[in-house]
Length: 537
Image 1 (cartoon, rainbow, N blue to C red):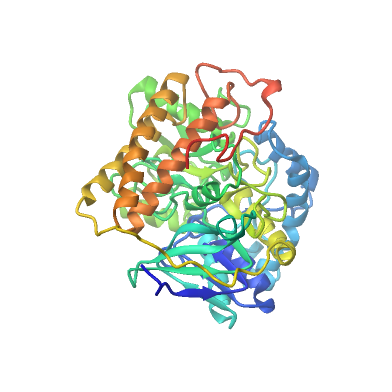
Image 2: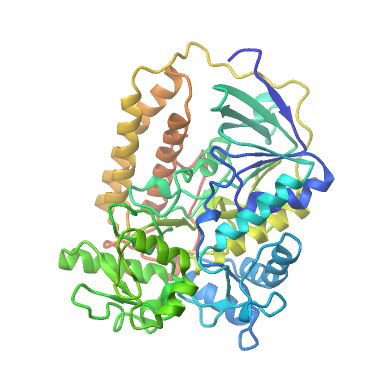
């Protein structure tokens, strides 16, 4: 690409079209033009696949203090109490705003649209406080917010745009800051520049760094990688949450079986039908996800079985179907009737509790660059996320970013350098990309999974170092494609996850290592990396 690089201008540039990105865009759109970039279709986000709901206090027998304490307990000593308090306090008003301003149809008691919200319960929660839309809450949120975004004249959504890198003020005048991105327009097969005073990363998670995940194909850790490359600190990436219950079936290996099933009385059972969690935790099958995932992992290694089972057969069958219609339909499509058959489940990579370091308003330490939603590390989740606090964090950070953004950036420079592809040519070695994709994800699953050790982490580090050398050589030699950009990002973030895990010499929350099985009070701090202290970008 030469001097003909198209350059697009906006007041606000949003990368990602899930709850966080769409909510931010809608909140600021009356102030000026908003451009949203998404690398696939607009609805292809992690939000769309969120089944459980959004946690907020609405019940008379619940309290903000209890929600705060549940979050802190599950977070295993690493939550930022001020952020937890702020998010929990903001939650009820923001849930109402989603319903009343943006038309999200949350379930109501008795089906009456004027009745109180129907509340579910999930792992780690001491009360019912999960606001939901049956078992397709994320799909409903995505539907409503996308409809509102499409209807707003100041919002433009560009699909099939994959970000290459952030535009840095350092290369313009030596100062620190961000003023947009270079992005690959896959539909037109060209690189374009998007410039704005404010760039908001709402790119979601990193599940695709691992071989087995509940995440959609777009979750390739892009936001963490591009923020790290521009110099933003990232933290606590060792805390990758493995969801305990992913459907185990050759035709549905990325389908999530919501924790809400256990919230309604589902029981995890071994192959011999005994209760897996009965003597393992006071909350039984509703124990926090890190505990349940480790117990399942240990059981599978001990027994040699390929899965455990989530049993709903003792519950009222009509209620099971009405409460979980999408899960029931998906299970039925592969021959499992959860009214009669226990559901085979295994753990899978699910949610990134670490991310780009931000404050409660989504500000990174790079002027003009904000991060909201799963890509951010605000201090809400600590070492393990409380169920359904993910959508809560997304809307809280998006709301905070909308309030603070106008005082955070500055106008872009008068001249934006065109994309320079140099001597790059079309690839004739695409097999290298697919092979390295598989190798990165296999190494992460085998060596940086649910249970870790120093030896496994060192093996993973060496493997990824070699792979990343090949990837970088390939990146500079050939023209960029979405596959190459995603591979570059997952390999970098895989290395960052390993480095964070190597530095944490204890077991805490989602990070469990056989070499340091105890949690240490003196290590109750965040592990922060940047380009100066972490792996080469």
